[in-house]
Each structure stands twice: as structure tokens, then as C-alpha cells.
Length: 293
Ligand code: HXC
Ligand code: NAP
Image (cartoon, rainbow, N blue to C red; front, side, top):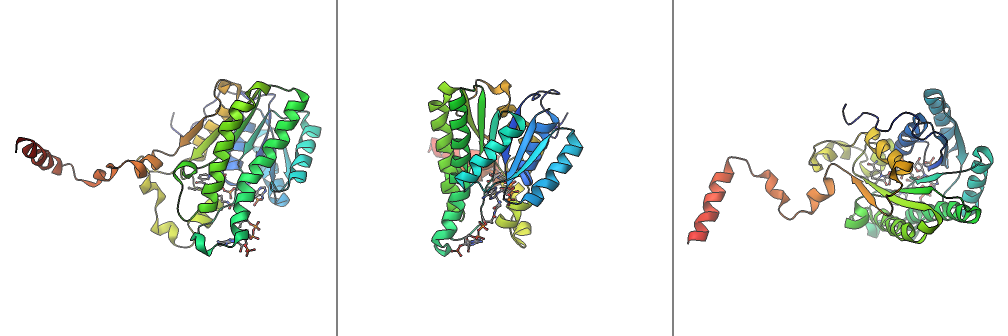
């Protein structure tokens, strides 16, 4: 057994149906694959229908489960409601929503146009709101229970981060929405949780956050105490668990899966990691001598 192993038992999600936004690529695709392997049926959505159809075909072949690819720009509430209705028409019900779609790029904030800032807020915050509201209203109206929403955020949702300010602002809003609705909609049988992933290599994120030779210049693994980036299966294991009935008592949490990355940046004395082992005898002596003096 290692960290790339699959966590839940066979058929753990049999009978379940989930919507995964941004499910055609990157982490959304990896999480979808595992949900399907566990017996769930999946709707994958994004703007690019050709990409979704190719992914759906590939995942159906690999897993033997059903995938419905639906084009839907999460910024458009009407389109989101249609996507919800088409999903229900095909599968009869939806048990959970994985808000994974996002947009992001690095830029000094003063270089951004107002529209550039809005574009990220609209995809991440408004998109998550649109999908959550569309599904939530439906579940509340039909009095269906045992539903769940998992939102993908980032650790800079609470630390903030320079050079990705629209994304940090939007993800912070998504985290606030997660915690707020975890309380407000618990009475309707809807659970809310979030996942804050550290660096997990994907083409979508790496091309926009580490363009050109930045990939070579900034080795993200070096920022992680465990000295490696995440493996997609590790994230898929966590998402599947949170979406499953095994997590029935887990509500309003954000679970960080980053090898300790954000805490390494936060702890005031973490920089002492760079002190060689041999130096500690001398440092201890110096400190103790101060106490005596
Ligand atoms: C400054 C930029 C820009 C850039 C776009 N704009 N890219 N401004 N620097 N690099 C501006 C445009 O000029 C325009 O403003 C406005 O943003 C909208 O641009 P469009 O190209 O028209 O937008 P759209 O086609 O909707 O595309 C959205 C996008 C794009 C976000 C710009 O990158 C995209 O489709 N991304 C989806 C996938 C993605 O981003 N994945 C990464 C998620 S990773 P004007 O004023 O000119 O009209 C992630 C990881 C977090 O979140 C943590 C990792 C450790
Ligand atoms: P990705 O492959 O670029 O995923 C983003 C997805 O969102 C794409 O499938 C994209 O599909 C979809 N999307 C973008 N705009 C959309 C819109 N307006 N409507 C509907 N779908 C839209 O990048 P990723 O790395 O897998 O990111 C997935 C999630 O993980 C994001 O929430 C991201 O913030 C989060 N995350 C990633 C990392 C990491 O290290 N990779 C770290 C922390 C958090 P289309 O282009 O076809 O629309």
C-alpha cells in the first residue's frame, strides 16, 4: 500500500450520481474517474463540449460506468439550471455536486483590467454560487435528503496570496459560502465541505501559474515539507470520501491536502530548517551561556 493506492471499498458509491464541474480535464477528470470506479454515475460539465465528449468516452471505457457530458458555462445561471435539469432527466436524481471549475492566471494586480478581475470572480465565486443555488433550490423543493456539496478551494483562501488576487478573493468567498451553508442548509439534509489542495500538477494550472521556464525556476515541491507534489489519486480519495455516506457527520470543514505547504510558509521560525544539524550544539551553547550571564 502506498499513497497512490485507492482508498474506498469496491462499489462504495453504487447508486450515487454526482455533477463534477470542470470534469473534462485536470483534477476534475481524475476525481471523476475514481467516483466512476466506485460505481457512481457522473455528469461532467465545462465550456468545451468536444473535450467533455472525449473524456466521457475515455472514462466510460476505462470504468464501465456512465458519464454524461454537458456543456455549461458556470457563469450563466440559466445554463446551470438547464444542466441540472438535463442531468436529472438522464439519471433521475443528483446526490452531490463537486464545484471544481475555476479560472486563474498570475499577474500584478495593477496590470489587471476590471474585466480580467471580474472574469475570475465570475468563474470561481459566481460559478460556485450558481451551481450551489440551482442544485440546492431543487433539493429543498423536492425534499430530497442526504445530499452533499464539495467545493475545491486553495490554501490561499485564508492566507491570501500576491499575484493571484482575484482567485484568492473568490476562493475566500467560496470558503465562506461552504461554512455558512453547512449550518443553514443542514436542516434540509445538505452537507457542505471544502478541500484545499496544495500543488497537484495539471496542464491547466501549470500553464497559467508557471508559464514558460518558470516551471524550471520554481520547483513547487521544494515549498512542501514532504518534498513532493500531490498525486491525483490522493485528492480523488479525499473527494470520494467527502462525497460518500461515510462522511455523513462531516459538515462545514475545509480539509487541506498539501504536504504541510502553507504551514511551512506561516510558522515564524520555520526558516531554521536551513540550519545544518552540526550547528545546533554551538547554538545551544550560545543560548545557555546567555542564561548564565
Ligand atoms: C492579465 C488577462 C490574462 C493574463 C486574460 N486576461 N488572461 N489579464 N493577464 N494572463 C484578461 C483578458 O485580457 C480579458 O480582459 C479578461 O481577462 C477575460 O479574458 P478572456 O480570455 O476573454 O476570458 P475567458 O475566455 O473567459 O477565459 C478565462 C481565463 C482562462 C480565466 C482567462 O485562463 C481560462 O479559460 N481558464 C480556465 C482554466 C484555468 O484557469 N485553470 C487553472 C485553475 S488553477 P479585457 O479587459 O482585455 O477584456 C487554480 C490553482 C490554484 O486555480 C492554486 C495552485 C497551487
Ligand atoms: P484545470 O484542468 O484548468 O481545471 C479547470 C476546469 O474548469 C477546466 O476543466 C475548465 O474547462 C473548467 N472551467 C473553466 N472555466 C469554466 C466556466 N466558465 N464554466 C465551466 N467550466 C469552466 O485546472 P486544475 O488544476 O484541474 O484545477 C481544478 C480545481 O483545483 C480548481 O478549482 C483549482 O482552483 C483547484 N486547485 C488546483 C490546484 C493545482 O495544483 N492544480 C491547487 C489548488 C487548487 P473548460 O476550459 O472546458 O471550460
